Image 1 (cartoon, rainbow, N blue to C red):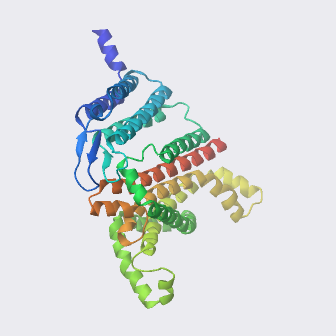
Image 2: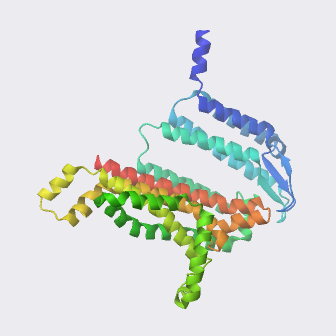
Image 3: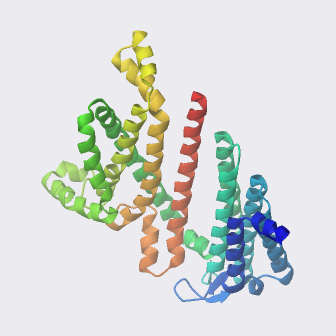
Length: 391
């Protein structure tokens, strides 16, 4: 009895959940969906139905071994490697299924990943994320950036090779390749441009709130009110004054400041970006040791030199944490800007919703998630590097 209880305690709870979800998705959820075109509903197929028996068996055996690792092996590196192997196996399986189901030369049919594929991918992602959090010591920032670059290179090589060309989302990309590049650039420009403008305004405002405490409550309270306004509502609120400004001032219209388009999108994103940067600037400056400031003052440094050379330098990791929050937030919010003509990858999301074309939605959603994830990893690495340097 004691041995049985000990064995039950050794079973990893998250591993049990991941294994159960993965098994359920393979048994009861469709792995791919075959459609005669992008609009019509399709026929669901399981993994065993679309792959040759040997390939399907190899895939299932691989996933079973990964489930055993998730259940009983505590080593974080082994768990992470198993999760990454699982992602490769599942991706290769869905690509093979699309290639097998697509008739040669046919550009009309669509083979879309089914719910079983997505559930498996989420389960493996949870396993990988859990493994990364368990790593002790955590991988160095350079290693994390290298891993991100390696993953991007492998994914890019697979896409360039044509491995996934018969998947429905890649069919949508082939049709919209020219527009995709333009909208992706617009998406990045809106996110980074609004962030840069916010830093220029929010950093001095945060310093002022730190220096003059009586301003802090009213400034942060006002910015917090802006943060509570839903994105689509704020876009709508800004359309009227900007439209009136364009009508009254022809120069503003010529500069692109109108009621619809990029102007209300950038302004809304700018307003959303202020609170995290201001709040983190105040928090970072408050954490600066008074002894460090006194030592700098004793060395004869001016107030400006103390601010730029001591206080801001020591507060920079906290300020960068706020900037990271803003950048990830803005990458997501830019998607909604497509509703007011702001452009970006949200164009494909809302066009796909309007046409009931889920693959077109994914064409906009997947790169948005990838951009946000990459930005988070890069800025986390930068923050960790600065913290390690200070230790």
